[in-house]
Length: 169
Image 1 (cartoon, rainbow, N blue to C red):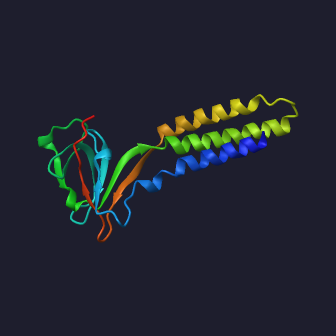
Image 2: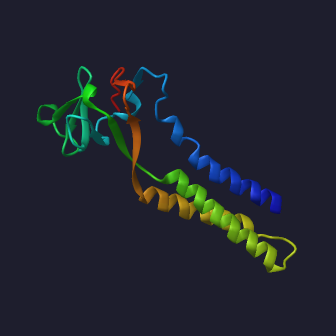
Image 3: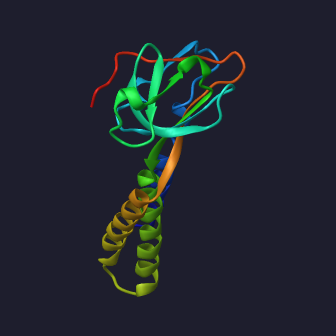
C-alpha cells in the first residue's frame, strides 16, 4: 500500500510539469504556427521591439496580423492590428488546473497515508477518500487561479510566427 501511494504521488507531480517545455520552439524551428493559441475571445498579451506589452482579446487574424480588442466581442474595425513580424513574445490566459490537481492529489495521498499508518486499523478506508478529496480541492483551486502561459518567445534569429488556417471556435 505504501509503495502504491509513493508511485501515485510521483506520477501526479510529474504529470503537471512535463507539458510546459513543449510549447516553446526549438533552435531548429524557422516558423511557428500560433493558430492553436489564437481563437476569437482569447485573452492575450503581446510584446515586441517596436511595441510595449499590449493586452486584450483576440478579435481576428488577417494576413499575418492579429486584431486585438480591449473587450471581448469587439468588432474587427475597432480592434488594434499588430503585425506578427513585430511580435517577440505571446502569452495566453489560462488556469492552474493540472498543477492544482497534482498538488491536491499529492496532499491527499500524504494525509491519507499518514492516517493509515498512524490510525492503527487493519483496513485503511480513509486513503482513497483522502486522495479523492485532495484531487477535488486541487482541481477547484487550480481552476480558480488564473495565470499567463507563455506560448511564443523569439530570440535573436529565432522563428518567425505564422498563422495557419484561422481557427473559428
